[in-house]
Image (cartoon, rainbow, N blue to C red; front, top):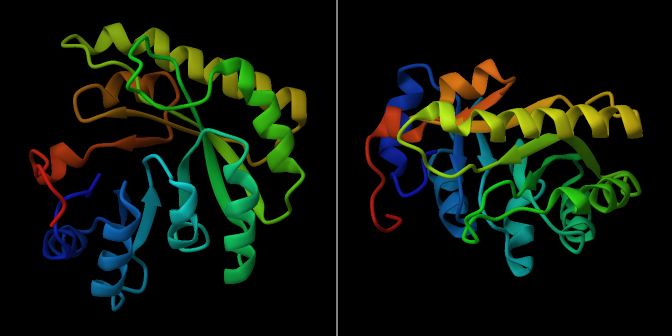
Length: 201
């Protein structure tokens, strides 16, 4: 995650070989894309709650939207992606934490999300994402990671989703356990950039 870290720090990480960065604020993402437009193979993922009025700043402009958690976002994403002439890959964010502050759809809501997404040709379903609670012992997050893997497998089989292969889970302190449970994407901004700034630059 590169959110709240300025474009110069992203440029430095790029020079060291990193190509994929995660952002959580639409306006901040837009500013960084403009500042770094000379880096042709730079990719951004959007990882954060999306306000309906900010969808057009994100959809069609990032490699992956990781945080889709409600049906009403899907037609907005499809419309924005269509206007950009692209098919937008997305992950469905799943709420598997007892913490109410965590975002995501409940597991029981996933079929409706999948079915709605499948009705929109501008959207490509690429997998699931979750944000488990923070545990001092990363092993305590393992059941959450295993549960997300199980949900992915169930949905891929039920709906015959050939591209539904991503599991975004695990952060700097627990990514090794997440990888053991099948993570294909991990969010390790703190390990790369250090502690996050309090406010976006």
